[in-house]
Amino acid sequence: MQQLTIGPNESGQRLDKYLKKALPNAPMSLLYKQMRNKNLTLNGKKTEGKEILKEGDVVKCFFSEETFALFSGREAGDPRTQEYAKAYQALKGLKVLYEDENILLVHKPVGILSQKARPSDASLNEWMIGYLLAKEELKESDLYTFCPSVCNRLDRNTSGIVICGKSLAGLQAMSRLLKERTLRKYYLTICHGIIDAPREISGYLSKDPKTNTVRVLSHESEDADPIRTRYVPLRQSAEFTLLEVELITGKTHQIRAHLASAGHAIIGDPKYCPEALLKKDRSCFHLKSQLLHAMRLEFPSWEKIKDDIPQGGAVLKPLSGLIVTSPLPETFTRIRNKLFTES
Image (cartoon, rainbow, N blue to C red):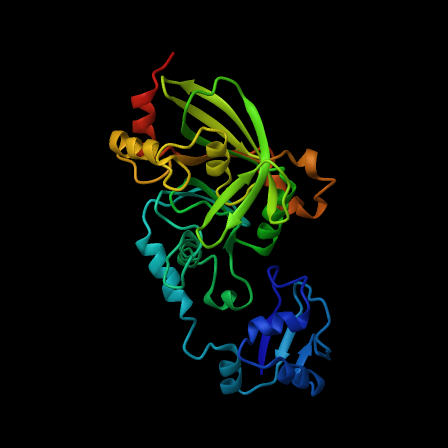
């Protein structure tokens, strides 16, 4: 007999959904049969699988050790564990900016993926899980029913802050803040042309998955999402503007495509900068990618959101009014200093 105790990251879901994660190699039809035969019980009682789990609930599996190992896939250990450890050791330049029991804010350098694009990739997501395993805040057995994850993604060659959820409560609270747009996200970039006043621009963004590019439309379209981008110029030179950008909506390549559609492409952007300007950028600044940095997060005060997100108090109260910044990459600093001087 094996006993599984429900923790905070497993509570709130149906028993049958939990069992599918805990015993991924067992057909659901067989699991339901085992429930009917009382070989799977919840808190010592017969169960149907529809029950909503609570923290502290106990699931007992009256299987042989061999059968349980086969159904759970644990007979040889989780092969992902080595993958996470390898990513944690291999990926360099990642830095923890803030951490508590529920969330992790990590500085991502240029060149590292936020999440895998292909099975063979190593990303910040794997690094983060390897980091938690190395600190012994996460056990290999935890990964069968819950896996920490990044909450937002940056392009491979965009640097800056990535939000990670260490717990289910952390993932849910961060997802809610992002969805409700109460977490303010600021970027720093250098763009072509002179921008001399703050502005908010809007439009509609349409994605082409074949080319992994987007188009910004001025009109509503069935396959396009509404977008809003706000920016404030910080400094100007003869041809460029240092820009602070607030991402109000968060869509794929939004800042890059939106600025380019307004005639202010980000320097070094291989997808959205006009070819003649891109060639000049590469020659002058030795850039291989866009100069875009997710530099700051500003969390809302708990008093302002407690009525809208009352269940998020345990996670969000410690973050009330928190401002987190990410260090500017050396390349960005070099180019900024070359183009702009203090007034």
